[in-house]
Image 1 (tube, rainbow, N blue to C red):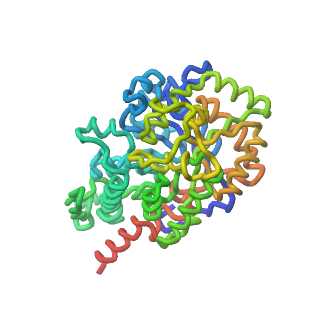
Image 2: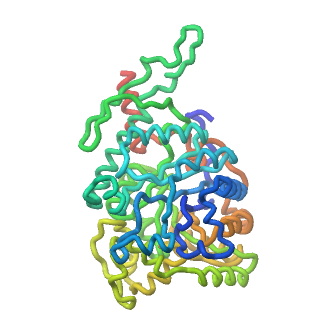
Image 3: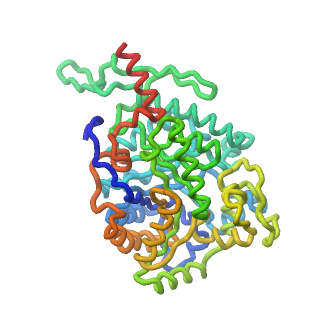
Length: 471
């Protein structure tokens, strides 16, 4: 498929489903590494990740979506001890290095990788993403985050995290630099590989970006020739007011983690309104909620699975996660105390989701620990394929959400059951595709072209740059 061809549109009502995971023995279900059927300790083995990729592609899942942090969860009780003891997203390895190996055993599966704008200069990062887009033939997506753990900032020589909204200011310029490198530095026909004249690249068609901003100075040219998508497909995670504003300019899909339908419906409406106000087609920007689904052959089997997971669930680990996400030390609070709203320099949207987003629900610390011990800050659904499909459809009908990032209780069982039990049921209902569409990750998810849309910030910048060049 060329940049100007269009993939078959994603039918209305067809869900997007990603496998949500992390390059770690502990992601969103603390304590499950102790479960006798859990294989997450194999995260160091390449075979483990290739098996996951094959399973996800067999189930026609849209992408494997990697979470990541560059720091330890040390807010709870003021130390990282509980995180280390409980494998609370530590040890954690770099997810980007897994993707070429997983792409090598798949043909259509996409890859969403979380990477922060706060701790790495955009010039080398842009090359890393271009390399992945080349090696995956256009199947790479970037989940843009600003980071929330101060421990990561301290280990890079900073005095701490910048203020929440200020991090988004940095992100705006970071993406501007990346877009300039990906979209405006190399013309499509710059690489000519002319053996007779001994010219591999035409120098007149490679341009310095000349960026000099508040946070970054990048005068030169991108190091990589254009990949299929040029800019990777942009995921964005964040539902705070500043995060919604950022999503309206940059997101091609938005990832949220709402604990209830009421909260999710409000987040979906706010995001769609912001997208429309910024001149973009909100229907072309899918919104995905974090969800844990436990699927068994029958409701009774799924309940037995849930009960076995709860035997190993770690409520303290849940509070370690929540402390890191919110910046609130839950160890210092009475378990029966109701969490009240407070300003946070961590994930402001998580604080809001459990304090003020739903006026009909008050959360005690104990309730938060019970809630987050399986699936983190996302809701849990369990049952037969029919029961789970019914509930997912209810979430869609009542919130307008477009799909789900599906977390795991244990690996590989959760993802295997999604692929082999849930997906066929959703296909019977016309809720999930029966084959992959052609093209890049962008083309598959949006029904558009491989290139970023002109209404997107990267597309606007690209079109203006090339118009000026032609002029």
